[in-house]
Image 1 (cartoon, one colour):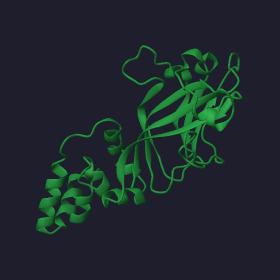
Image 2 (cartoon, rainbow, N blue to C red; image 1 turned 90 degrees about the vertical axis):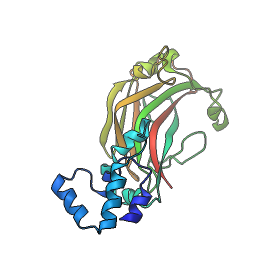
Image 3 (cartoon, rainbow, N blue to C red; image 1 turned 90 degrees about the horizontal axis):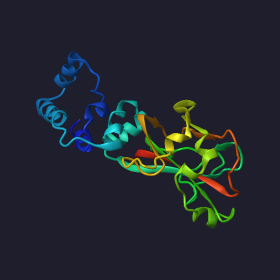
Length: 239
């Protein structure tokens, strides 16, 4: 127990990682009584001294410790995994009314996407705190030109802005069908361009299919070689 406590001392919600979170008083007292006196004192001190409160998506992630898969929770407890800021992104062409941002045939490729097969690698769990959605017009359809495209807010992409998006993981809704107008952030100095902050962040587990879909009501006014950049922003577990 002492070694495990050393491994999780950087986290404020240590009880959830150790399985103590959610216990009633009797269960917690029983767990403490089973420890030797030195373990008991150090455990109480660790659990009561959380230090400075975590902020941002890290603080949100710590609230979800109890929902992490056992192998990831154990990695955090033992110090083999850490929490890090991350954005999972993908760029896709706007060439139909339905655009799937993450697909099983996708390979990880710098500048185009940073996940393969629409799944997180083993031992990575990701809390989606917010979503970026931007659009741009490439000079042509070659990879180099797509990667060098300037992506902007949706203010001048009306057919995209008036469409909808949804986000699922393991067939469970993270964000149900929602108007893309939420990504029009001009004049809002509190968020980056094209960023939608989730009021209800949700976890994506490793090796589980990520499904983000854009649905458009019309292709009117969409120029050839228009591309969408989608970024899932939040906190991830990493070695």
